[in-house]
Image 1 (tube, rainbow, N blue to C red):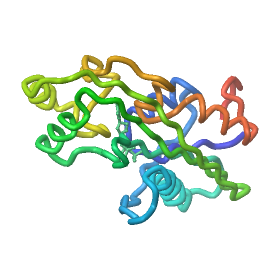
Image 2: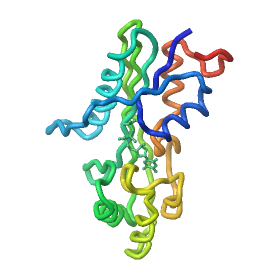
Image 3: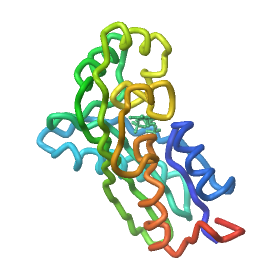
Image 4: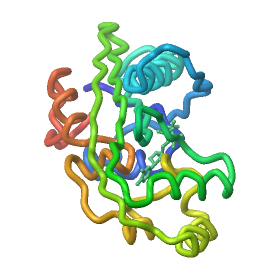
Length: 197
Ligand SMILES: Cc1cn([C@H]2C[C@H](O)[C@@H](COP(=O)(O)OP(=O)(O)OP(=O)(O)O)O2)c(=O)[nH]c1=O
């Protein structure tokens, strides 16, 4: 049976993977530092970052499947990652208020045994309500913004701003489960196996 390794420090990715495949996987955070790669298309950049995270973690194991992801908001051709301060979180939310945008995840699954890497993108469209400055400040004060791409969490109080989405909800939370299931199938892993991995 294959070992599954989640290359992530995100508690949400761990929780989502657990609900999908059960408890039987390892978590190992990558030490890869995301860099900008000027000239690369934003979606290509997300794929690159996810792949580099997987490769970094792969160095610490001999066998198994390494899963990694990188999630950002894509609005007006620009990526909005995790805000570095409450001020930046407020700026991001002011920018997104009243708009439709994408949440895009680059997903990589790397098979250490064969060396095969599968990298795919998943996009979900989000319609955000118009939010007043007072609401933005109050939301940012909750602290929910800081470790979330685009400075909001659809799975938390940020749901108050998300009118609707089109696409995979789990993708917005950081791990596109439908697409991941398809990729695991390609590697011969069924999420319904009782003894997974
Ligand atoms: C838009 C949105 C993002 N997010 C989160 C998902 C991701 O964890 C985070 C984007 O950060 P990422 O850089 O994708 O991931 P991470 O730094 O949290 O973890 P790691 O690189 O170690 O895997 O934003 C939500 O939880 N809810 C949302 O509604």
